[in-house]
Structures are given as C-alpha cells and as structure tokens.
Image 1 (cartoon, helix red, strand yellow):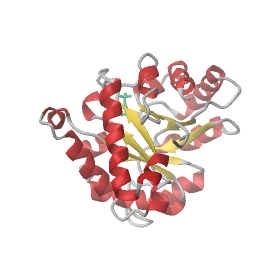
Image 2: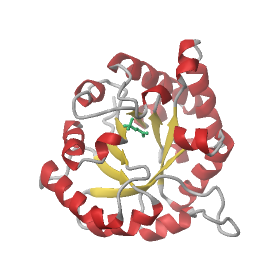
Image 3: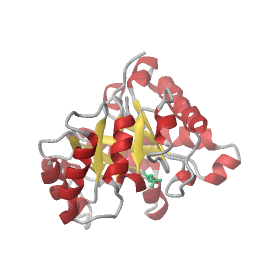
Image 4: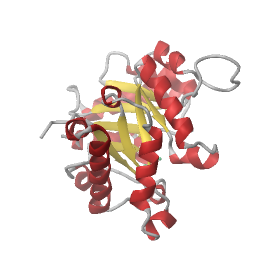
Length: 254
Ligand code: PGA
C-alpha cells in the first residue's frame, strides 16, 4: 500500500482580514512546532487575503490556497479570478465545487470540470469537493450522487493529470452543522470514492490519490477520522479559523 502524504486544508470561507494573517501564521507555526507536520498544511483564503497570507507564511511549511477560480482563461469576466493569476501570486491549492458554491452560485459538475482543467493547466492543485445532501443520503442515493459528481468533475481528465488532484468528500449535512459524519460513514464513502477512481483510472492511480473528509471536523473528532485507512486528511472550515485548534488537526496527521 502506498503511503499517501496527508493534506490538512483550512477553508476560511469569507472570514478574516489581511491584517489578521500574520498573527494567525505565527500562532499556527508556534503551535505546530518548528518541524513541518506530516501533512501538507494549507490555508485556503479569500482572494483579497492571498497576498497577505503568502507574505505571512513565507519561509514556513504553511501553504496558501484559494477557494474558487474562474472557468475561463482571461477576458471579460467581471469579478472573477483566473487560474493564472493565482499561480502568479504563488498559490498552490484551490478548492473547487464546494457545496456552498454549488448551492448558492448554481455551480454544476460541468463548470467545476472546466475550473479543474484551468487549475491543472497552470499547476495549481485542485481540491475537488463532492458530497451528498441529507435528503439524498436518506433516500439511499448518496453513492449515486457522489459517483455522478466524480464522473462529471473529472470528465476527460487523464490518469496522468488526475494524480495532481485532491478529492474532498464533504457530506453537505455535516458542513458547518457541528454534526460530523461518523468515522465509519466517512470511511465508507472515501473507500467508495477510491473504488470509483480505481474503476475510472486503475487501482494504482486510485491508491495514490488523496481523499479528504470535510464537515465539522475538529480537534476532538479528528483522531478517529484521520485514523481511517481511506481518509488522507481534512478540509476544515470552522476549526481552521482558530490556529490552536487547527494545529491539533495538523499534528494528528500521520
Ligand atoms: P466546517 O466546514 O468544517 O465548518 O463544517 C467544512 C467546509 O465547508 O469545507
């Protein structure tokens, strides 16, 4: 079995100001310690915070990610941020297809697929979010929904390219609710995702892909979740806003 390097990615959502980045980075590195944690430690921040977050984390093991990207290269797309702009700043990860964007900005798998291709073309690692609604889980459709999202988001992506992607399983009912999936529920779906990726790309590629869990992961419940064999890290909202809490998650990664 391959040893996949874990990813612990904070999703700050629309929180904090540029002036808060330096203090946050200092507190997080002090709490994690001098040596880099066993995971890739990432904070995904609003577009306007990116320069401050990059300056605050320069020379540290903390990497900076974005929370969305345009599906287009350049041009008349008011309000959008191009993948090339993120790369030029020094961003290394970008969340795409978060359920909040799917729900509030009507993002489709097709659009997420286009965003994914933009990111891959410039060498920024996409964190591709998938996950079912509570009603879909209750009606027994969770796996079908996640399979459709995976196939749509990764449509046309080669096996060479997919190795540069990170998948995040985020059941919508667990996001921001304080009710995480159980270790077993999260493991079951992450294993299902790996099986599906194996069907699409072959077992070896799937074995090396990193699959994160997200949805009310915190300092208390991360031990069990991160111990599951198919969970390779977390995508963390609320708990990533507090550097001490987030440091516990980073240090729990093996
Ligand atoms: P949460 O958010 O950890 O606050 O549930 C996770 C996410 O939305 O990525």
